[in-house]
Amino acid sequence: MNKQNNRKLKLPKRGMPYKYDFPLFFCCIVLSLIGVVFIGSAKITSSSSVIRDVSFSVIKQVLFLSIALFTMWFFSHVYRFETFRRFIPTGIVFIGGLLLLCLFSPARNGTKAWIPIPFIGSTIQPSEFAKTMMMLVVARYCCYPKKSADTFWKIIMPPLLVLLAYFIIICFLQKDLGSAAILVVISLSCFMLTTHPLFKKWQKRLYVCIFIGIFGVIFLLSPLGIECIKHAPIDEYKINRFIVSVEPFSDRHGMGFQVSNSLIAFARGGLIGQGLGSSVQKFGYLPYADSDFIIAVIAEEGGLLMLTVVFALYGIILWRLLRYALRVKKEENKVMLFGTAMYLFVHIIFNVGGATAFIPLTGVPLLMLSSGGTSIVSWYLAVGICQAIIARYRRGEE
Image 1: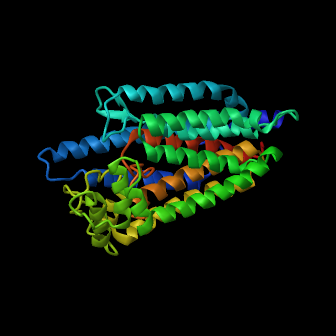
Image 2: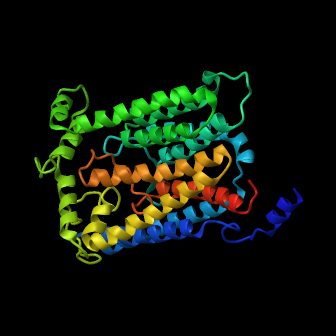
Image 3: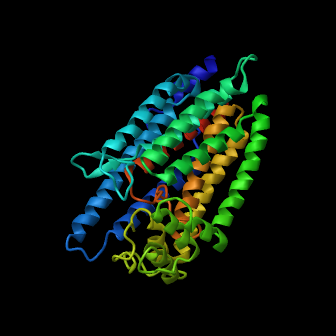
């Protein structure tokens, strides 16, 4: 205990904690700076106020990045699961309240997932914080040592109810299917990592459900599946997203407008790209060039070379998180590290998959590259927690 206390006293007052993972930190910073550059480039359009739009977008993104870095620094120093677990129930209620507060805000593209921030023209999307919260919820209720008399349902009921409540609010009330799907994937991934004896039977069943779900998605994206979807009792715009993912050029000037132009941007990029600021598709052909389709702008202006750099950086981040997830001893720390890796991986699949017509569009951001304050702050919060876990592991304090 004395050695541990002495080590705590030696921690620097500024900067990241002693023994943090520098490659993880470096890759996140580089990706965020690349995002700032291409967000500014995506705002260069034929508008008469282009200078004001570019300056405002870049300044706003830098401001949110600064807040995100402070959040990462703060949680990397103060996070300790044994202390934070007592605040998790309060956090559940707080995030739930923010999710419900979104319902009183004006809808954007049919979705009520944002809370407006006065004076700065930006918004908060609480569903991003709900993803990190669900990792903590699974870690608290499924990983912490249980009494021998506990039953499966007694252990699983709290996280299951929280996930169900969040899912209903996000999917059915806010009508944000993409964020709801990511929340479920992260939660189930964390649950599959737990080793409680009572979970083994249900984890096996869940594996079967996952494989069935994968084959179900493959079927829905086939020509026969599209014919079935056309007659399904769901909203027309959702049906169109499935059709576009299979035949993006079938209605290039209608429902396939965004995806077809995104694919053209990838084709125009070639090996080295058209040059920074030289994208043509952002001039009215990609309505959300700085957010949902930022990867298309990067591909067109930076080409395959820049895409390789971006995905290499993402790969290093995933590798570092999974590397330590396999090494740490405490199960709650494994859940946080693995859950954060899944957080990033699923966002990449959903965003890039939608922009390339691999899967239907979901409207989720590409972490660290897309414009948006909530997504980058939420991501760096999770990274800060991971850095705290990694630093403690590398200092031998586990």
